[in-house]
Image 1: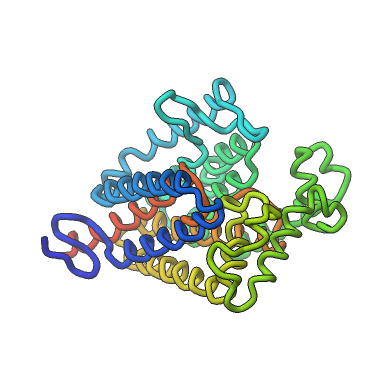
Image 2: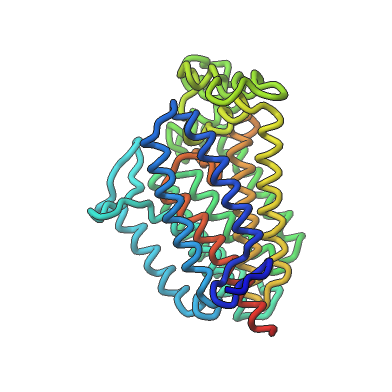
Length: 370
């Protein structure tokens, strides 16, 4: 099998991106093993999920973008149908109705929409003149808001915001007027502040969302209750210092002061045990993957491929930014995992599926140009 740095003629694979993802996943397994008190069972489950995710990634990388385009409308319709089915037959976990249990597999349809929504918007805009007209922008926004509102209703604010961002990134990359972007951002920001800090929030937001806002503004107000997570997280991050306390020697996690240490708050475990050096290693791997994704987006052939590749890469950045922001207290807690580091199932598969689409966009582009 003849392999170059970017692709093989028999296996469509971007080697540089694959190496970055493998390094990130291996680093995640090391941190997770310590975060979950050296649980071999957890490590095996995470390994199986990563194996499934990489398999899905490699399969999707073999599909030409033009073939994917034919399936997008059906995928969007199926995704909306599954989101509606969640309200009828979905299973409840941690106070939210987000999962579909098909017996053989239990999954969150909302995770699938992280890919389906940007694919749908990219397809819609690729078939129309760019930059898009106001009418086309309105239609695209409707396609984004429909699944976003259904997911927010589950309730799952974190995932709904991420899906909205993935669709909006496509619009931004399509070249819409920046005056419209700035005006919309100011309007939405003002509306969010108005809702969050006035009596209106009692009518619009769920009780747990109100608690998260209050905790973000003043975690010390309830140090043993709502503010406990973020206070313990900050202690763990700060106590790591330059080199950390050492692998499996984090006191905040191993003495069980830090809640959700193997999922949403695993960055605090990494910071405590590996210190600033470990954090910089993580950032370096993330930066490598992001720059590779942006390179693929910029060099992609065709409007659909460029818009989709750009959206997938920028959404991956939002994942990183929001998780680290909430763990360090810079953003409200919204329940998003740290990509390929946190323990998870459907989120890992959906992330790696997105990178499979990136690989397919890049490798098939090269073949078409030869």
